[in-house]
Image (cartoon, rainbow, N blue to C red):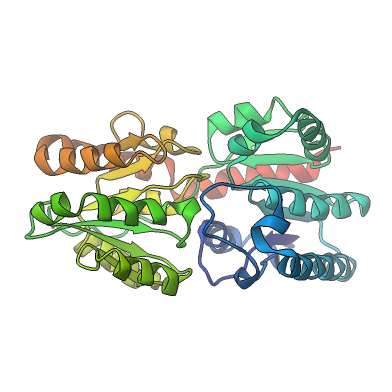
Length: 377
């Protein structure tokens, strides 16, 4: 049977963020059925300010006039290349992996172009769609509704997000959980070594809560030192800026930035050295890093954003309020001081990941979504 040609719009690695990892998983798991032609949609990080803790629609204020001009020219050139690719490749389907806010509207241009050429479209929401809706004005909600109805189908990462999205589009909405590999687990028991290593995985930046983690280390320095608690961060980004902050705040004994690691190195850290996994993000979709930590047998702590409450519900982890340093500290202490509760959390997490996020169930669901989309009138 001839493979379906699919243009897959996604960012390019590095950095290996959540959307990039999802694209790699999609190609790896479903590549035997679909011929994925990747179209990369990266904006150079040197032109963007990733340190802002709060989102702003005003990119001129965020990035400056010169950098914003460079970004707009870059995006325009991308759209031209995209049109040429569609004409040359003649795909049956365009699959857009989209972030939220400005990324959502940028990706909607790809959506409109494909619609004009009568190509079927899956619009896959991997960003914080709920946050974008909550902050949108009335006129923007009208615009969002009109854009969403131009796709043939939509995909979200949780049932709650699917329910929300159905309020804003007449088109089919599917829920597709992120796939995750279950690595071979060691017999090591967490929180019983000479040091308590708390790990975070994600691109360095305020949206991932890097600043919160560093500020927490500075504010609770004595408590962390007394309890032998140390933070470890795996991920790329503005290493120079955050290393300077660590040295300035004199918390180098409490925080280690490991930079970008290969999957093999990352899982070695999570399986053999980590005791607790922390995700202090201000915004998330359904973070693959969190699922991987659960699959590695780690007790987890994460903020109540995106689909995280669904993932960590029913005793599968500790959910804390966004930007609540006090709640994070209390959750870490609870895991250290209550071993029975900690072990129960680990068992619940492993069972959930194996039953819900397997590669086989992901492939079956993705096949269903693609078949329904291409068959849509």
